[in-house]
Amino acid sequence: MGPNHSRWSLRRTGLTTASLTLLLTGTVAGAAPAATAAPADAGTSASVECFEPARAHSDAKARPGAAGGHDPNQLTSAQVAQRERDFSAALKARDQRRAQNVSALATVTIPVVFHVISEDGTRANGNIPDSMINAQMAVLNESYAGTTGGAATEFAFQLSAINRLTRPAFYPIGYGSSAEAQMKSQLRRGGKETLNIYTGDLTSGLLGWATFPQTTLSTYDGVVVLAESLPGGSAVPYDGGDTATHEVGHWLNLYHTFQGGCSTTGDQVADTPAERSPASGCPTGRNTCTTAGVDPIHNFMDYTIDSCMTEFTAGQATRMLNAWNAYRAP
Image (cartoon, rainbow, N blue to C red; front, side, top):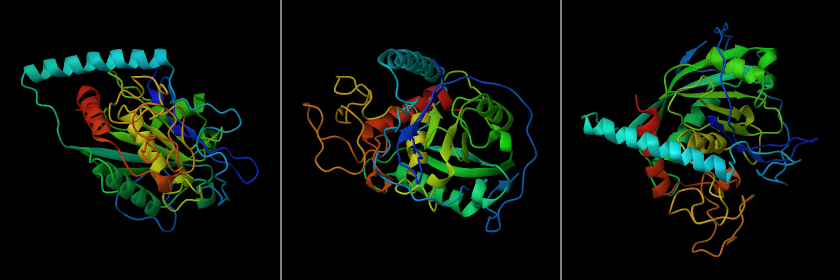
């Protein structure tokens, strides 16, 4: 089973329309390239080793992938079944480690490395400032702490480095491309526990994608997000930083809330109401399945606009922690 998946896609046609995306892929190897200077308003909160022109963005199609685009993080039932078998095996292995007095993590601080990819080193072409990255870190910590609503998770995020790279061959970042594989194999840092986030302009109208956890670490492991989706960016109404929140949810083994539609298993989390299809915008009283509960439009793993996304559930928090201890705990 490939390691990747994504959140939404931001389809751009003329001024642009919006949608969602995630992913599943392979690995490659390479050597790390030289870094470039930070933009003028870059801070000093992390070690430093790239932004697109501001555009108007329409909410016409929201995240569900316009123009026939497919979200790579939306899995088939066979892919979900394979992932769940793998997850069960990883949980069993974790329990065996516990039996050997290897303690499981309960509270987790995840080190984060941002790789800022730019075409020419300018703010207009990917080289976003540290201020946007710091704001994104704040959003991640607030979202996963439950301060925006819903359940608190056991996760916190700590920025450990900002790596800046000017490389036209990697810009825009192409989902599933050989250039993406080369970029990640050259740049990825740390072990399974390190969250690598790659920002830049993205091809195929995507807002982002991510890898699901695997037993064996791949250089492909990490999250890719549109630079303009970070707080302060121009990807309105997806400019609140929740693209990263959503993609990190995949990185921690969450499916979309609408995975499996109205089936009994759905997203494998009991306390997220079943949802037949992704929601867009911020609908009121949407209920697409006959089972109890209206659609979870405020959940970070749906496709609604950033201002509508506010919560994880307790079941999702538990699934993420189990996945962390099974796959990513050092």
